[in-house]
Structures are given as structure tokens and as C-alpha cells.
Image (cartoon, rainbow, N blue to C red; front, side, top):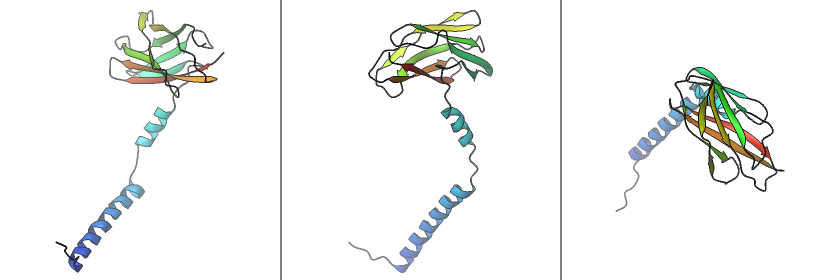
Length: 153
């Protein structure tokens, strides 16, 4: 059963197509997108390899730092989190390779005076510069991601 496209059906299809194109054009040209600034902030991940990093966790400033730089592969190092709200705790933390598939390495934080401290290490691979991501999930639901660059020796 083949039906012919009548002039009326062609007109309705053209009208729907024109309406959809107008809506897309309107949204593209006239929408105010505030999420761009949020995305830009999210894209700026602090690198712990060079200096400490500060971020707001629970409305209070928290500073993350590596105790002894530079970090060396296959050697323990300490991550310190100072400041922040004492009621908000790191629930889960792990390291994972950004461009390497080396699994995840858990980081267990313990409470110390003025913050949290975790001892961990990263593996070594064939890349001359390994980039690791430190992911921290907080008890208030926030997530934090920091970069850690490690040169192969």
C-alpha cells in the first residue's frame, strides 16, 4: 500500500520541519548558558605535583598537598588534607591513571590534627611522564579530583 504524498501532507511536513529548525536556531542564538563557567571551573584540575591545591568542600576551604615532592613511582608518599569542615569526612579515595590503564589504587585517609592524611604509592609504566588522578568522595556528596604527575626514573 503506497500512498501518494498529497500537497497537504507535504505542507504539514514542511511546517513541522520549519518549526523545529526555528526552535533550534532560537536556542542556539538566544539562550544564555551559565553552565559554561561551571564547566570551565571543572576543567581546571589542580596539579599536586607542583604545589598545594585549595578547594571549597562543604563551604570551607580545604588544602591538599603532597608532603615530599617530587613523587617517585613505586615509593610511598603522603597526601595531606588540611582545613575544611571537620564534620565532612573523605568516604572513598583512589588513584587512577589518566592515560594509562593500570587499575585503581585505594587511598585510605586517617584523621590527624587539623585534617586528614593518607599514605599511598603509584606504580611505574613505560610512559616517561605518568599522570594520575586522585579522586576523593566526601561524606556530603561532593567529589574532588586532583592531578598528580610522576616522572619515570
